[in-house]
Image 1 (spheres, one colour):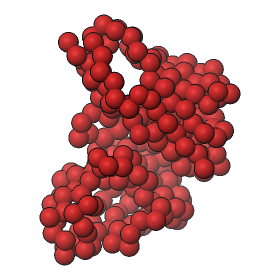
Image 2 (cartoon, rainbow over the protein chains, first blue to last red):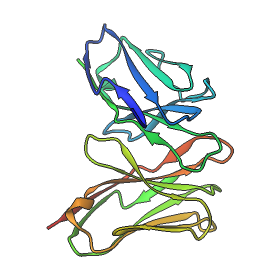
Image 3 (tube, each protein chain N blue to C red):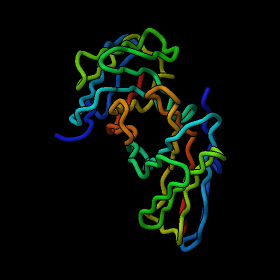
Image 4 (cartoon, each protein chain N blue to C red):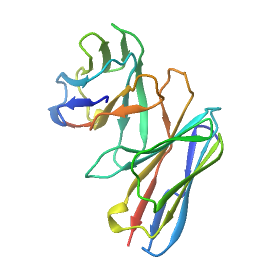
Length: 113
Length: 111
């Protein structure tokens, strides 16, 4: 496996369900990010983890809960979501101080019913 | 707070024509990135521009950076249908690892 891998690729969940999105990077990067992309607000930054510490939380509702157990893995735990949370969730990684920008995963297409 | 504005947001052009997408950013940033996104897909890195006057070219696309004007351009030469996609520019927020993205330019190249 190379690059940034996200699973699952597609997820349909009810509003009372609990699910988790997973992201894994194989690039040796030390910063990871969650973005939400929807038709209404393209590319909203949700969370930033730098050296496994959360350094940014952009006013994201508590029904989204990130977890970064190590520099290679990032999770987004979901519970009691709303239909407006349906979107493409993108994970990205980067090297702090590097100059190559972000590498994005393929995304998880989430539908809340 | 760094803000990034792209224009146009929508661009429809004929094959064989040339056009330029503009990316303005509001505060000092020495690094500018261009990404491509196909429908339903992730973002693919196209260009990394690291200094004033930087110019990068790949096929029919050429990107440039003017840090004094806080402007980057993505020039399309002799467009082909395969270039149809959404193009994002992103500037690095000074002192942080955060990239701030523009809203994207949806390019449609018609035969």
